[in-house]
Length: 227
Image (cartoon, rainbow, N blue to C red):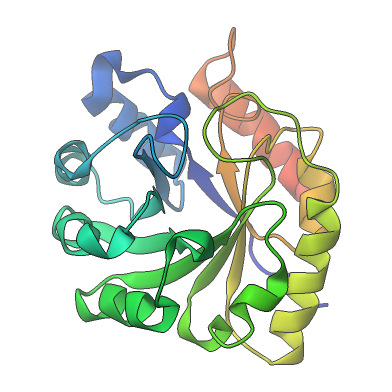
């Protein structure tokens, strides 16, 4: 299996918002690949997080591409607003889309790259005919809704099966992982085939450590996992 470059996407859901401008400057200085922006609506998920207005503010503060993860019901209703708010990539859940082909093409029509997310128990067969339409597949390694959950173990096999599917079709599609992407779990995730890591409270925004110290530890684990 060809080793892809590992990309880091800090999760704003785990960040300290007391100085948002300063946070964005820190993330830029670290050279991170994406800002992961989680959107929850209290319907598809049991929690509520951010909307397009805050994303537009984040977009105005940074040149880091925004990776927008829509954990919401009826995503078609909001795709245009998030695209206008600066999304580089918009990921929707296959479980929330009635007409998946239409939704993915709608994302592209507004100038963003389409991504597709799967909850832990959702089978890979659900993206059989959509894989060629996306830039990235996000494998949820916890059930969406809250930070601080434990890894669902069988999702590691799911990542490996997805990587085999992508490579078998010779597609240029990233695999992103979201959910307890900890320093302990990252080596197994990378070994399975993931190459975009949503870094949260167990790998980047770590209590008792500066952002720079956490990032250094994260990079060390990534480098050890790819050499």
